[in-house]
Amino acid sequence: MWFQGIRGVRESVASFAHFVPCAHSSLLVASPGERRTGWYSLAMESVVVNIEVSDAPSEFLPYGAIQLLLQSKTGYSPDPYRPVIQLKPNRKGEMHWTGDAVYHHGDGRRFFYLAWLYQRGNEWVMFRRIKLYLDQINALGESSETTVTISGVGKDLAPACSTAKVL
Image 1 (tube, rainbow, N blue to C red):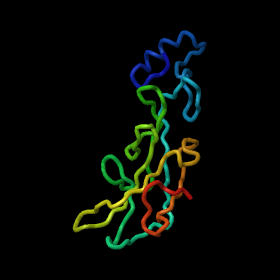
Image 2 (cartoon, one colour):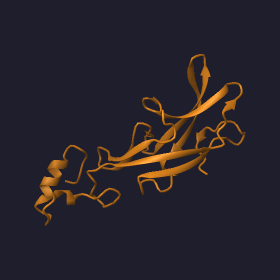
Image 3 (tube, helix red, strand yellow):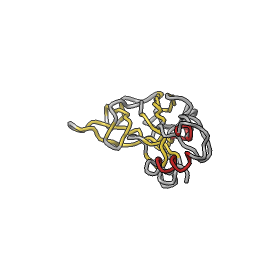
């Protein structure tokens, strides 16, 4: 009966409390950032990811003026390059990064979308995206803030698309 998500925490902690020679049941779980096989922290780890984009073009023909914004599940982020993500257990008890801007493949890999937009009339329209996988970000989870720099242009000097090139 290991930690199995938010439901069952109290029951799991209570069922093991008599096996642990301590007065505080909070000692049953790992502290934030600590990794123990089978034990998870009740506190969620939050990390701010600073995404720096090198050489991002501000114009591109035939679209004219363009911008690059972080895509989230609710639209485009007003703070385009500073998503906040949390480390949480899934239904199986495996730890994964989650957040409003975190997407995932069926194989479990997590990533951000950075969308290129151009203005058509009064609306901004997406015409291509960059996919930044979280496993491309060195030192993710080692502190409360981390920085990654990606290229804003492709080999042909057009706005980058597809998988991000980390610099």
